[in-house]
Amino acid sequence: MTEQEIIYTMALTRVPRVNTAAQHRLMEELGSASAVFDHRHHIRDFYPEASDKLSAALQEMEVQVARAEEELEFTRKHHIKCLCYHDTDYPSRLRECDDAPLLLYYKGNADLNRTHVINMVGTRHCTEYGKDICRRFVAELANLCPDVLVVSGLAYGIDIHSHRAALDNAVDTVGVLAHGLDQIYPRLHRDTAVQMTSQGGLLTEFMSRTNADKVNFVRRNRIVAGMADATIVVESAEKGGALITADIAMSYHRDVFAFPGRVGDPYSQGCNRLIRDSKAALLQNAQEFMEAMGWQPRSSENQKDKGIQGELFPDLCEEEQRIVDCLRQSECLQINTLAVATNLPVHKLSAFLFNLEMKGIVKLLSGGMYRLT
Image 1: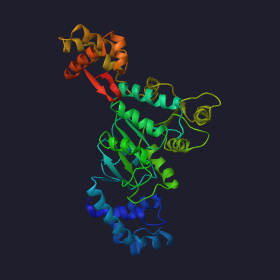
Image 2: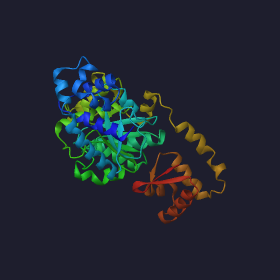
Image 3: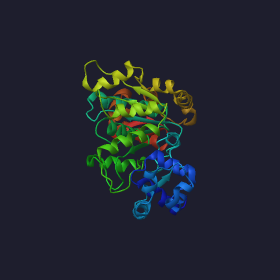
Image 4: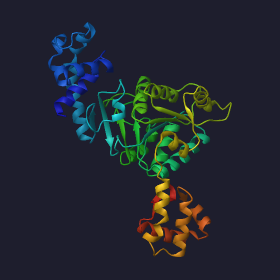
């Protein structure tokens, strides 16, 4: 993709009164954004079905080119990737959706087209129950499917707890923003967002200097839904953005799952209704999710690998073997819990864990959690 084509694509996405469907139609009929710009004054010669409204709107494209040139310079300065619709790095699942953006801005290192991608959404007013589901589900999924990419919206509540759970379990996570990459909203999540750029990324269809307006959050939801294999609703009130995302996912013929909640709890009503109306499959744990999706869990391979680990590392002492045996029973354990399970003092346990890390058998996660590699 040439820089000029990127600039014209940026400009086309900003032409007033030209929606995403019209943008795609123009690209299909003329073959490129550059061709749209070159023939903007006589568009009907190439696209006879163009309306008076569309023809008039394209006259403003030249004004948007100047803004696009500024944005391209901003992306260069801040190491932001411009992913155009037909680029190989563009999310292929999203490309299947009729209203996919022509261009996305991406800052991160995660492959957006890996084999397994999910999104986790829910209320901004999540309870301890919802937070616990995020931690537990992502930890389980990280063990069963370590290459999974977790997508959410970086918002308060379930979104940010899903991102943080992914980071804590060494899983890549991408936040889809409702504004440009020159800001982070809410500001309170800035540190998490910065961490995500080196273990996942930040993605948006909006140029810099775009405010986080309410309508942008609704538009953002279609990207969250479209770039994933499945939508997982953790907690939701009777109405809310999570239910909008679930509806969009269903319209894309993607799988939708929901964790049930206690009858009468305000932030479980949306999930329970999705399940009741057969719009979402009831979900209780990561193993069920893997089975429902037909994904091959790593567990069987893990057990095989772990079964021969003693042969691969025959020099394990009795205490090290005890640690490995405990970690085989759980996806990950905090060091204090591991100390109780192995009956080893923490200071001795730390030394053994360090040796196991050096041997490549154990990995240290955030929060003092350990798991087998």
